[in-house]
Length: 138
Length: 251
Image (cartoon, rainbow over all chains, first blue to last red; front, top):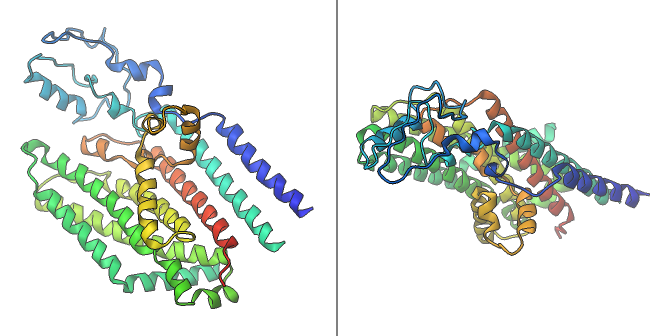
């Protein structure tokens, strides 16, 4: 009977893990919404200046707006002195900064997954604790 | 839980008496001082440079502290035969493990807070601004350190201390990798690698040095989620450690 309980406990744990975890792991860029990924989605030839204004150059970056000192400004400073003279308006993302915003702190759409993963690990921990404890008593 | 509390206080006192802790702490503080003295070749970026590398130094310090504090605990208890009388009467095995873990976790947290204060002092001495999120960032590194501590405990039950160091360091490195980087280790089996990656922690959850160095604010709810994630993963590793420990024949 105890063996049966043990098996049920393990099966429940594994099922919970695989069914709730559902799928294999993925990067933030794999599941990011369009507005998050395409915030810097326009190309320029070498030496060409980006002439888009803020209104027709929509960037989906609610996280970084309103900060006094952002990575965009720094990139602009760097670009302004560069060969292309490429400079975006303050608050706009610059090219090559996607990695920066594909971190968990900036990707709000990944926070639910983090919470879900945490719950799965907690359930696994409790399941393993109970299962190994039972085996010891037997 | 009273037994766990008492035993963790005993562990705490024992670890504070060891020279390993003070040696590692000194190395971290010297490294932070060294980082601050490296020129960034750009006056306006000096603060960012010191913050970024300083927080990275504290994170590596968390790994060193976890290994230095915990890799020897169980092997030494077994070698000196203090383990048998402990788990024969006053403590069960899970109480022994939790007592050792909480004691080491408190010592590690105290040491990491000291390194954070050291980084603040270095910033003040160089007349650089101290970001408001520096302490929360250190808190996340402390949680990451607890995860590493639980990993060290897990390996210590079936690996010797010299083997524990590379195993934990390897897990530390793997947990820093993104899923695509992890899959690139064995590109012929992407499904398997993605499934295995699911079981490894995402250490980038604890990394907020980039936004701090660039002056970004981070939403408080993110800290809560990241701390919860780290604690749950540490609990998972501790349960695995306990599963191994319960099966060990200590004779």
